Amino acid sequence: DDCPPPAALIRTAHREIAPDAVFAVDLHTAYQPAIFMPQQMVVWTGGTDTLLDPESIFPAYFRHLQSAREAGADQPFFNTSDTRAQRMAFIRDLSVTHVLINPPLYRRMKPLLDADRSAFVPRYDDGRWAIYEVRRP
Image (cartoon, rainbow, N blue to C red; front, side, top):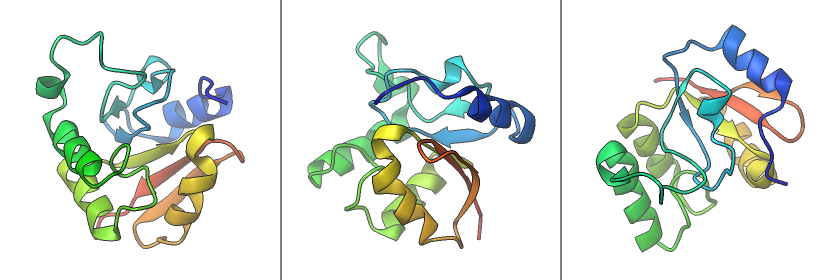
């Protein structure tokens, strides 16, 4: 079910989201969203094996990744075990302005973000992909 972002999502990102926005993205997405959209992503997706030193390129992300894995989660933010405080720390520490939900995580993450409308505002949803804007306190 892993696929590139659909054209409508890409158009939304280009037209409605500032190019200097920062997206939280699924580490395991095979198609790096930055190839299709101008915004920055918190990590290079699809595997960092080809990067020379990903920990120095994405240090804050890798600190959160280590903490998540020590707690038994696969990755930070995109899991059901993180508390709201952990999610908001991730958002803060990585200067995240938007969250991109892909098809493999849609059913898991959509209810979590929808339940916290004080922090996450839906901006795009096609039933498989979603974008949420982070509302700062």
